[in-house]
Amino acid sequence: MPLKSEAQRRWAHSPTGVKALGGESAVAEWEKETPKNIPERVKKKKPKVNHNLREADFRRKLKK
Image (cartoon, rainbow, N blue to C red; front, side):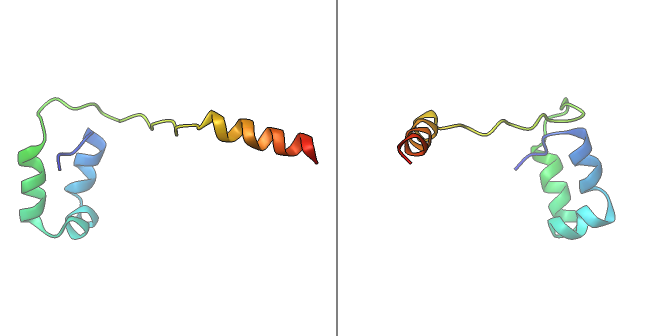
């Protein structure tokens, strides 16, 4: 799995990251799969909202 940001790349090369990923060879594998140009940070994805569930919850509250 490739790294997705420069911040993640810095973490992977830190002692904590090397330990978490399973050693220097694992970090090298991740680097091999990572493209050269990646963003500094990656924005968080917004969670998907199921509007049908919200509508149902609203209707239940009205019935009470």
